[in-house]
Length: 134
Image (spheres, rainbow, N blue to C red):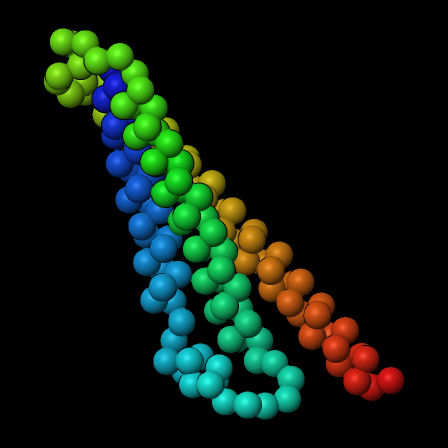
């Protein structure tokens, strides 16, 4: 059961990480790309939000992908017995039950990281504006 759990959990974490990485890669809109390619004074909060979301999703997706690789290595390091040839239904169900909360936590972590990055970048812009006024 434990070996099946590790295999399924690693697969599900890889799938969840792929969702975050794909979301990060395709989340920038054509409008934001055009906005990024122009020169101007100040900043655009919509572009900043988009970029911070990409950064957060990439970080969370990469972390989950790394976690799935660690699970795969753990699977390979465990001794292999004759009982491990089949797929244990309880292990699959347990992997799904454990992966759902991990996905929810990853989503909330991504939102937290996005908000934190957005606030930090906004503070940098505000400080630069204040410095220019002086």
